[in-house]
Length: 258
Ligand SMILES: Cc1cc2nc3c(=O)[nH]c(=O)nc-3n(C[C@H](O)[C@H](O)[C@H](O)COP(=O)(O)OP(=O)(O)OC[C@H]3O[C@@H](n4cnc5c(N)ncnc54)[C@H](O)[C@@H]3O)c2cc1C
Ligand SMILES: NC(=O)c1ccc[n+]([C@@H]2O[C@H](COP(=O)([O-])OP(=O)(O)OC[C@H]3O[C@@H](n4cnc5c(N)ncnc54)[C@H](OP(=O)(O)O)[C@@H]3O)[C@@H](O)[C@H]2O)c1
Image (cartoon, rainbow, N blue to C red):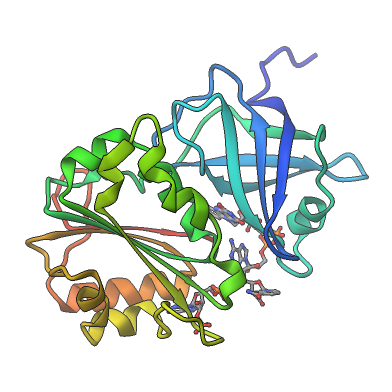
């Protein structure tokens, strides 16, 4: 008989929000022993009709001090986990690995002037958690959030972002937030319309933010499409940025969102 403790807890869906046909946010109950740093991800398990648990990584959207766990997910056509995710309902069970993972956390940086958060698609998730960390608003003069999506309907969490200055732990400091939406496959008033690496190379991103995107001033976090992550880090390297490692200070940190 296996008497070892399971590596996961059994949680339940408290609420669901469907943004588009394939973008869903969901909240789970949180075991009081589950601890994480803003920017980290959890491993979630859904059980198939055949009784097999399928595990995938999902970044926490909620803050480390929240009572619940929130996630922002895309259901990709034909995906094993995605199929079950599309059918998720309030009350359903979701397994949560007891350990949180990941190094996309602001403690990797030495102080800088401005924090830049560059996301495509669901790569937005870890940044929503980081934005709710009171400390970052003291550490940086400005926080720039860039969210690149195909269509305007995928510019999720806009209300939460515009109401961040009413957040009890962030408050007025959130006026330092510079939110730059990017919509790449249809025209959308007020949004940029080119890919993030191209916007950096042309200087347009820095111009729109009204800031200097340089290794001296900027600390940059990148999360999303692996090709975007690769192209953006190559662009930053060409501008003199170095990867932040545990032992070596640097100016950018990355995570592939799939
Ligand atoms: C560190 C990490 C963090 C992650 N965080 C999130 C998150 O917060 N939200 C989320 O929705 N997914 C996230 N993912 C992806 C997630 O783990 C699954 O891959 C996704 O749910 C699809 O699972 P699947 O079994 O349906 O398809 P899979 O077989 O896992 O993937 C099929 C294909 O779908 C595409 N795809 C997968 N995930 C995404 C995505 N997020 N955006 C765009 N295309 C994608 C890729 O082309 C992939 O090859 C994360 C992955 C990693 C490694
Ligand atoms: N989004 C949808 O409407 C939709 C609908 C149904 C199914 N799907 C499927 O879901 C999956 C994920 O779609 P998604 O829209 O969330 O993710 P995505 O394809 O990663 O696109 C999100 C954003 O990332 C940009 N991007 C992609 N590659 C890049 C690169 N190399 N450098 C810089 N930016 C880059 C995209 O720009 P570009 O537009 O220039 O690529 C877009 O602005 C895909 O397999 C897709 O087929 C998507």
